[in-house]
Length: 422
Image (cartoon, rainbow, N blue to C red; front, side, top):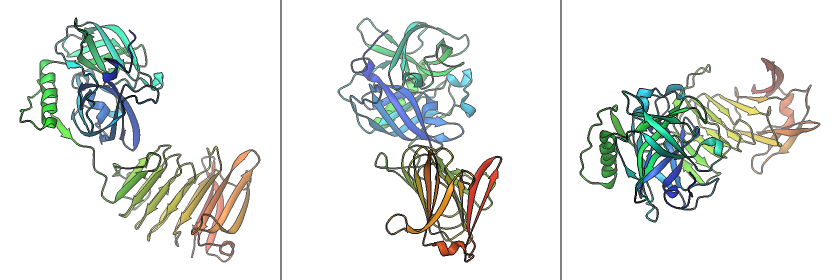
């Protein structure tokens, strides 16, 4: 079946993005009222990482186009399904539904109604599988109810379609949701498993919607689902502030307990994204790790490890002992990273730089205005130039004992190691 993403019912199907464990996730859903979206529970909650943050919903999305704009998810309701290692059992898939309450009501668009106990047969499955590169996909297929379970067996349209509606069309042309995409045995074309909405499920969904509307409806208890809990986007971890410069917004971030090999660290925040991030930790003892953007990482005290990933970064140490990581192993363009507030005992590791592969030179008084200092340039034929500025240092510090520089490798990975010895 071919439907238009900008007319009913294609305009009711939404593209969802959010963040869990510092990473961007993508799923699908459907408008069931102008400001409420039905989706899969695992789109907004993960049993390992917790609740999603930064939920954005876009109706009728098509390969980057937002014909009706987008809205922020201001609260959500979900079932506590278990999906460790991205695996969901058939029993858990029966409970894989959630509701997102939106900041903006799409009053000019249609909605799908809720239907229960559909006995199987011809349905349409719509969503945004990753293989479609942001295009909306609808597949007409025959589904059957798995004996003993409130679950349809059908055919997967691909990862990214999770939460998309399984729907039927009435004689009046109106679309009714009878389930949502939950899981699959493999990729596109493999056996797909879709939650079958039961009367108890519909009652719970309607109660969640009523709660968002501020009415006094009493939520009913789904007969076949685990306990549910309302949730709001997780607040930023105390002491952690993040600004995404690529979208011009402050974002919340979920820190997790640090479990790595460095003694003294207590919390970590990892966000491997191409966006340009400003990350500041105002409490001690952090591991901060960003992605391929041009990032600014700042700590204030304690023992910290700052890993700017690839790209050009600006990293500021605190009053304690700090380690800075710079990655030149996969650079596709020149990088220039500045390390500010480099104190005695601090160290910098530049991955991928050794004299056998690069010509390495040092210069004074280079770098950004106000943050100049000793600057290393590593050049090689056909390779991007890598530069490192240590604010406030000079070439004299390479020979007066203040700085030590050594080169080595770990498991075949070469690196430059610089330490403030003063």
